[in-house]
Length: 266
Image (tube, rainbow, N blue to C red; front, top):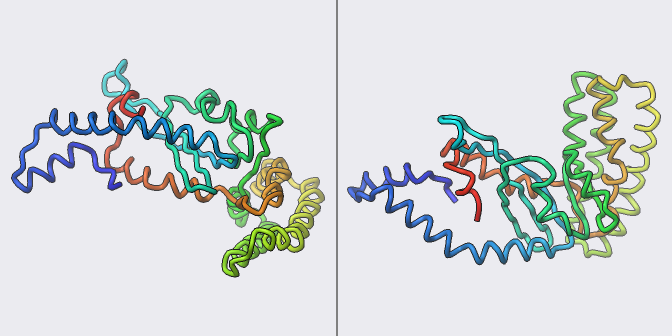
């Protein structure tokens, strides 16, 4: 949980006058991971069996055995099942679509992601309902505040209304049926209003401007951004899977890189 590299743990023991050889502490770690492997395999099974997954990926530097002193850019693919609170980290040397195939290749249900193009391939399957992330759409409009403040603020205010309704549902402990009713009665009109506004405004907006990019990001994913209205259990954004990734950022600062591709695998 503290993401301490073994070298640093060895130094901590040494300060307490407990001398542990590197080979010993590395051996302990390997043995522990071997014991945990069946649990990891069960976690893969449980995660892939879920009907609603949020997916994201994050980089990790890995030493390249073929190039002395060089590091390869590997990736943790992270799968979060909001209904059960399950989180799975799956390492791959690549960010290509093939890395997600073991988990998403046969997946059926709701798949919520950011705008990374690899996910679109899986989202097109008839067994998949693709959900986009309003937090990512909002970030694009936030970037546009310096480019076109009036229109960026208008979009952000409409997105703010959607989030206010989600907070209301949570604070009032609404039932599933009440959440669905609230979204259809109050969220849907906001989404429809914003959709019509973007449809008209984008015609007279430079595509390469930041406000143009923000509008295009939302416009291209409008169905997926609206899809959370289908089911009261669905979330408005992908923030929970991003939160699950945050501790890895601490690890990247502590251990700088992993020793090999193998040590990242279960």
